[in-house]
Structure formats: C-alpha cells, structure tokens
Image (cartoon, rainbow, N blue to C red; front, side, top):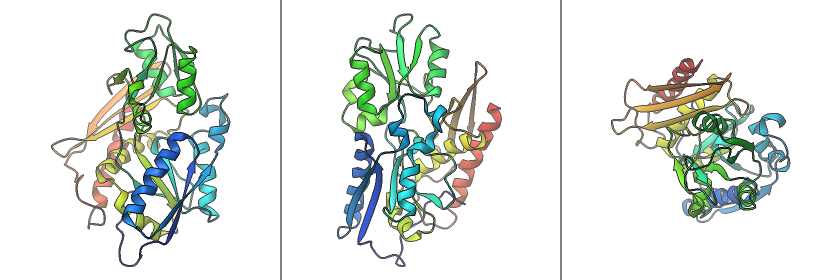
Length: 323
C-alpha cells in the first residue's frame, strides 16, 4: 500500500465531530492540541475533542522498551480506542510508531517536522566534548548510546526512562551529568533554553521519523484520511518514508541501535544517511535517489506515488549497505 497522502474531496463533506486519541504526557498533549487547532482552522464548525489515555509504555518505567515489548507499547491503547469507535484519529511522535502497523490501521498524515536532531542537555557542562572522563550520561535510546560510546568511550552511559519532565527532573537532581533528548520535544514545550548543544547528524544521527508527527486512523475510514490530507507535509513524508524503510528492511525496532536521516536536497535529490550498531561495530551507509523527487506538489495529484516508491527503495538500498 502506498504511503502517499490523498486529498480531501467533495465525496467527504466537512466533519461535524472528531475525537483525537492521545497519550497524557505534556509533550503528547501539546502535539494533540496542535493537531486539534489545525483541524479547527480547517473545519471551523467541527467539534474537535481529545481523549487522553495512559499507555503501557508510560506506566512501566523501570525497564527499557526493548525489554517490555518495544514501540507498540506507546500506541496499542490508542489503536484500541480507534477500533472501538471512541476516537477517530490518534496523534503520535512518528519515531514511536512501529514500522509495521497492525492490520486495519494506517498513517493518514505526516506533518511538517520540527528539528530532527538530538540535543545535549546539562546543568554544568556546555558541550558533549567538555564532559569529564567517566561522566554519567542518561539516555533511553540504544541508538544514542551506541553513538555516544563510539564518540566518547570513556563516558558512563546510563538508562533513562520517563516523560520529558521526569528526565529533566532527574538531571536537575544530579542523577546524571548530562542527558540526550530529542530537540523537537524541548522546542515544542518552550524548553529550548535547556539545550546546551544541538548535536549534528555527524555526531548523533537521528532516529527514523524523529521530529515528525504521524496521525493514525482506521484503514476503513477514507473520509477521515481525506479530512486530514491538508495537514500532510509532502517533503517530510518523503523523508520519513525513506528513513522508516531502512528500519522496516532490517526488522527495526527499539531492540537494535538504528539511525536514519533523509533530506531533500536543493537539487531535488533525496539523500539518506543510515547507521546500524551491532556486535560492537558501527556501520554507516549514505545513498541518494537517482533522480529528483517532487517535494512541493500537493497531495492528490496523478502519479504522486512514484516519489514515495523511490523513497522506500532508497531506504531498502541503505539497508543493504548496512548488512
């Protein structure tokens, strides 16, 4: 099934009511409110409501995600709400969405993403390189841990779970010398001043889909997919399609240290960098599409699927280079 977005049309008149399923962390609620506000702008007569939920991924904080079931733990309860009709759409941080959705569900829109890079956060130290030998760095990500260890093998990389405020609180109490977080979450919550250093992709290649919001719906609801089409950002969707294709091809989950970052270049070529850390080795791949993709054209145009197929193929090529 193509990942390309579709357009709203006359067959689907404006909705009267929409319910958004969301996790109840402060960041998740910001994301849901952002989508709600966009929908209210598009459909002023529509009553858009939020259904807040707590997922297993939010509840179990004493073990890493790879030990308790992976990324699906952040989406399962929201998908149940979609299936039983309590909600019409679910808003996710795309990097938390499994590469393969359960049967009957699909991504209806990928919105324009915030800063996809990682952020170095510390009370006492200004940069990653200024950390003293043996400093304690917290992260919940195997991907980040592998790249931190490659760059600074002298550091102590310690597990760090919890929502954004919980993680910052642990740092402020002195449990860590520094932590690494997604820059997008900090910026969305007005906490950009906590960032001491933005880590460039050369230092910490992002996770597939990092910084982007994905909206999930039932595959049997083309009306909702059509209503959400104006929220989709074609450039971001092409980029994350390539990134997620790498992970899909490698059976990716939070159980393997995998990174992928794609950018549409000024000449229209889609460039993808990917990284896989296994058996103590960090392998990298960099590939481009052979021809330019159209990252500007709106959804619903004839032939739009070809660019998304090219993005998927690009990710598969990168995966081959990482094996």
